[in-house]
View 1 (cartoon, helix red, strand yellow):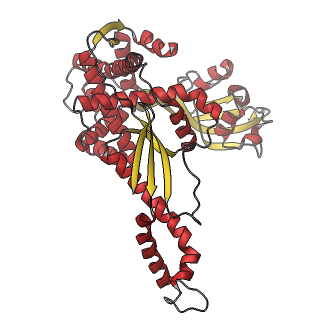
View 2 (view 1 turned 180 degrees about the horizontal axis):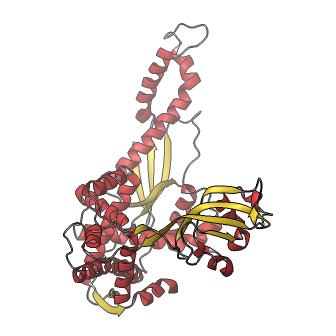
Length: 451
């Protein structure tokens, strides 16, 4: 087999593979011998079908199959051995590719278009400036987080007198002329919270109501929607559409939620036993957690801005746009030409950034190990627990959660990509000039609204 490469320009090349009969014929003969052993042709015993007949019946399809294998294997081998950095996948050339006729041809020639990664070096210096937004946790944020903790670790207490925000339980029954309606609606385990009533008059009927009190009210007026009314009475929504009756609610239980006190018990629940021993330490620990979260936000924004600065710096580098559009179309047949054209600029920027990240990784000899991916998965797992207010989960839970994540190949690749980009951003941060700006959380969030 003969392989010829022709460079069109810095980003495009054509690779031609010339296949002679001698390249594929031995494998074709081998395949025909295998077919002969298994062929079931009327009038012939197994294994006795004439070779000429089998060649006539299956020869061309076997030739086509073997040629496809040769093309795939040798094209990949050529790219790897010559260390070609290609974009996308090789595509059949639309201009130089000759017509193929397996019926008459014995020698074949195939030409593929190949897109090459542009050759340039990413060089960053102190002349390159990137904004770094410094966000600090303020007192209001700390108080909000404390309220979140006290609310999460609070407790329910049974009371004798109701407040509007309490959950009251009891028996509810339909009235007619001020008395229980014969055959009317009656429910022994009704639950509601008057604070959610839309009607203020109906709500106030339950203010300071004592346990065992019987309160007459109109739920059709009290509730915002028929769905809420149906939920209270445990009926279907269509069954309460015309319901306007008064009801009597006999209170059997009053449950009030109390936020946790700021004490050692709360400290231990949030951060683990003995980790925090005073309210001052508790507040400091919260501030540290918030600062870590805000630092992650700052770094994320730095990544956005650094990406833009570096893309602009290397904006003049040429890419094989026509090839890439064609490759996107072939890879995503559902996308129209208009959609590809509309979104191509963003697609190209994503590709450019991936190449820049790869070049920085290579020039700085950066790698991502399996152990780093495993530890990063545990960090992601711990972060997800924290989102639900669980700041001190057992190590076994984090490990188990991380192991589940790592069972998916796509997740592993995503984690590796994020680790790679984080390492690259650390390199960028060490080489460029940081234009540090202190900013409030509100101002920081507005930065994303502006984009």
